[in-house]
Length: 200
Image (cartoon, rainbow, N blue to C red; front, side, top):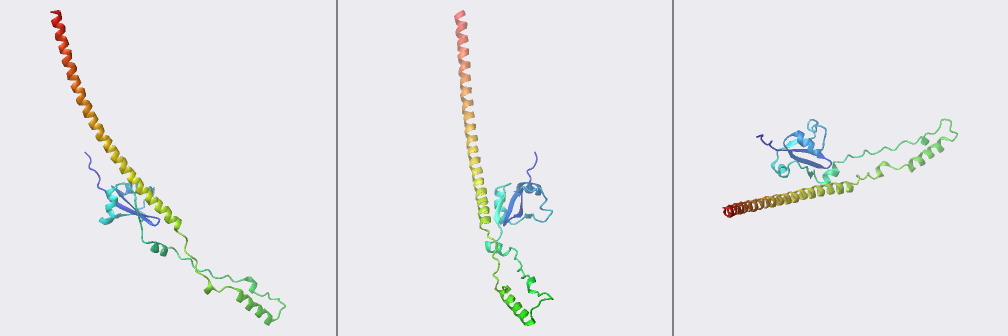
């Protein structure tokens, strides 16, 4: 009889979560994650040895367990910062070489144009992207996975109860059939004896 493969726990990042799975091999873990690429060879998946992190995946072999990676503040801090854009130099600030205006008038125009340009120091920093929809979607996914696990457990309990009920029914039917077979055989023998006596 083949020995059952020992389960190991593997982890890979998915969005702002880490996805854990208890599986007998890396190939089985990739199948559970639905990946057709070798995430282990690419360095984005690894084996987990921490008992605290292994406990829940080992309790549900083959199921993908999601856990948020870091706090919300840490996730926002990890977003890339947009580099401040330098204000482009307007071509209109360059006076044509053959301009008929005097130098003083041209300098006054240049000063007025410079004053109209917004200063870089007064620009407000760009706010980070809104992640409310992402958090809502991930919460919905986590809730659905928990609900699915509970539904499968409830179904397994019902199946166990039905199997027990089936065994009890089969035992009761077998006992009743054996009793009726014995009764039928006894009646047949009694009838045969009565026929022999009647003929004799």
